[in-house]
Image 1 (cartoon, rainbow, N blue to C red):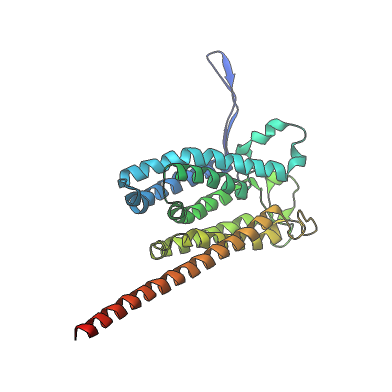
Image 2: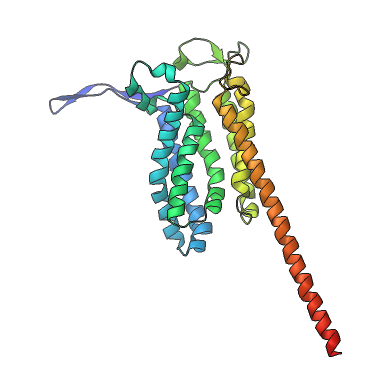
Length: 293
């Protein structure tokens, strides 16, 4: 693990001292997550969404970047806020450390909440179809999470319980104990889910809301299960759950299933109404033909 990729040692320029400057792997992975996923999402937005709102593909592509000038900072603020609240006892000495995001310490669900809230406001203001955009974003959210877990593994954060047999010693933790590499478990799971959603997206895109609901169900289950090995089982943060993230995962799965069920019954109802209308039209035509005879 290499939490710090390289360090620029202190130096003097124009009579002033600068440094040291350090490049953290965690921060680099966050940057790569947006650098890789955002252009791909923007391309899909220009291709699939832009024509529906009267824009050219180029306009849709460019406006997606405009949207993310809001999404990125709000996701970082949300992720850091959740982390500080969940680990508030670690920040009693210096409140300035609340802002040291380059050293790690972001809660994914906090980032997701911040990003979604910012996106919903922007999408509503610009009259973009919210379900369709969320469907387009679903696979790339997973891709971004995969990059993030590489950063977590390098930093040593978000690791699992102590396991002398299958554990890994993370120097950044400072306890010299072998912890389960749950960061890698989620990394592999995120990549598998990304590929699955990416491969079926064209088939499911015609059903608005299905892709983002599948994301909620599949990722929620993945994270819910991994949380059993990420936390000390004797430390219950909430009454029924081992951690706030496990609680969030539970409700994410529940919400995803609820939306999928509603979409299924809505489509079934619309088919029945269409069939009834078709039968009524056919019956009226047959009756008119009989009278003419």
